[in-house]
Length: 118
Image (cartoon, rainbow, N blue to C red; front, side, top):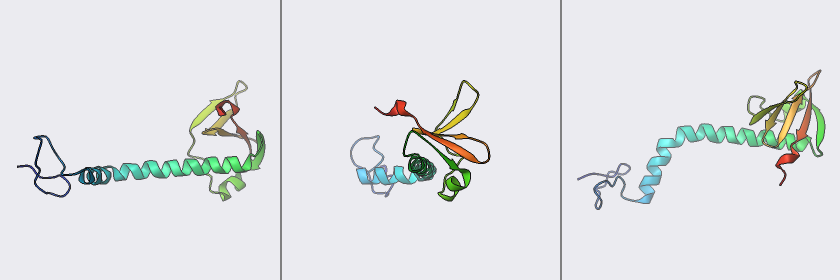
């Protein structure tokens, strides 16, 4: 006789059954995947925060800001969702639909990608 992988109760029913209930199955899988979920959750939270910061600083299609303002608001320059080079060789770093371009003297141009507005 087999026992539930989560609570250890004896299993009745199908031969290949591993859990006695949906609750035990969910608990087992949540515990098994919790480390990887935490990493993903933390990254997604910071990406959302980065996007909110860019959105707040760019109420129109374009705006300029400084690196110190971004850093003080908690912006993480290591987390982006895409990179888009221009024909002139500049590189825009995007966080979903908001992007920024590194200008001179620690200034940044922030833009909203209108192609994603649908």
